[in-house]
Length: 284
Length: 320
Image (cartoon, rainbow over all chains, first blue to last red; front, side, top):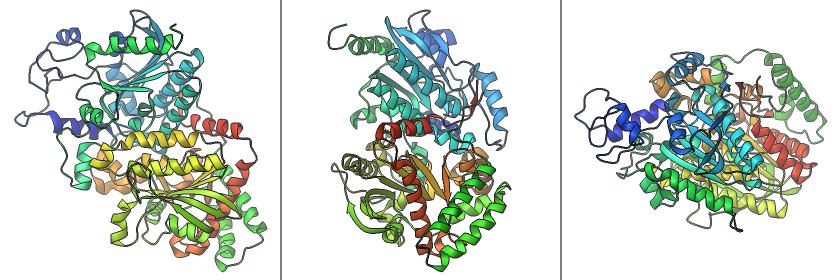
């Protein structure tokens, strides 16, 4: 599904006159261009227009976790290839290429950390790994993050970025929806808080499972948050789409997220929220 | 190290299951009807065939039969399987989404709650039921029926038959993804015995939303998949007409789903497919649902919920 979502992003954001692929550090909002270190210093937000560039999982963890507190879990976990899936390329080859390109074992990095001095579990998705698609490895890591949080009775903070379930794993990728859902059920039973940060894009199978089950759900500005993306809706129904179709701002208006939080405000926001949850009715 | 599936799978196990089903069919008191007798013979033949991997053509044949326009839909089965059915309509918030039907039914002598996707037969009815593709209101209606059943201790049967959740502007504005997630969560938490059966198209999130059951079955020619063959082909092959190739690659047919541990059993269909004989198909389906319900009815509520959670927690194949 990742290819579909990429097409969607292009449709929505590429200025019409631009020919060919743009440099990833060129702002699709205003056309400003930045060096990588400049963007890193601004948390990958365009200083000109406020556009939020995508953030890789490890960089996001560095942005959110207190220095040196993140301890990664399940780093060795890899998806298998139960269907021996082959489209234009073998799935095993796609996995190997994605790992080479991203330095990640799959589309999520998870582990224990503290955020503004509050202990929690973090699970951060990475769109650069096969469009953040959810297969067996992603589902398992989400499930284990829920279990660790439930056992430690600490909050789970999930940062999502995904085109949906990973087609190459067939029906087993669909089964990651209920797998993560029952894991959140366990988290709820243990009364561990669950906070979800939806970033661009959070769609399809991830939106239709754990991502939508946060006790508190916030979104980054301009993020596409939709079960079905605009291109498919347009093609299937021939409906005229509103300009802000599926965007974070429209999701806020329709009541699906609690807040839109700019990236610079995200860490203090999470800090306040975790403090409220952790201190509890007795004031900690 | 791979994840342990909840149960052993593979052709041998499937053979065993089919044999068990055969034994059950044989022991039924009310076998009457030619279709069922023929069914026994055919099941026996099928056992021989099982060991062989389904070919691309066989997989595609399932896709075609699952979508056959004369295939029985949920209400066709309800009419034949249930002695009484009182439909419950509306989500008590916004509207009654007709792509989902819900109600209380008398099934083999007991009261059950029944929820299913519903496609239309005439052009008019297809529109009215949005081609069996639910809006969020449909999932909320399903959740209403689930909650009611749980409170009164009625077992829940769900019949899955949808190309997918409706891909439209209003559906998105009303929170399509969120309601699919919450419907799964609601079903996962039920204390009552629950059985789901995919009776046609088990299309993606729109299907799995009502399939978080203690036992999940598929009819012989049903399909269960993460995306439609056409959608998969359009994305991975960049050509929707490669649907047959895509289906062969992602294997949405019942036999593969059983092998992967996604379903617990296959419900036989009459010779040629369920569309050939609605009455016989309904009898076979009712037998399958009743048998599965019997398997999970003896457990206590907490145990059932733990097992159900464990069943879905174990889904997936990975290493490390």
